[in-house]
Length: 57
Image (cartoon, helix red, strand yellow):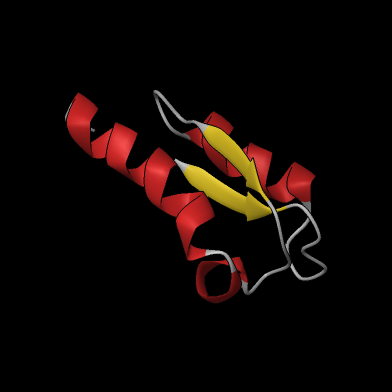
């Protein structure tokens, strides 16, 4: 799973999606915020990570 901040100026959405295509079951998730979204929007990324963990991924 690749998490991408919708306002990220360091990593483009296309680059993040290209990483997903390299994985057998890659998943892309767009989240609010910039490259620093893990610190500025922690609640936004915890749900996708939790779902992935529950799936056993």
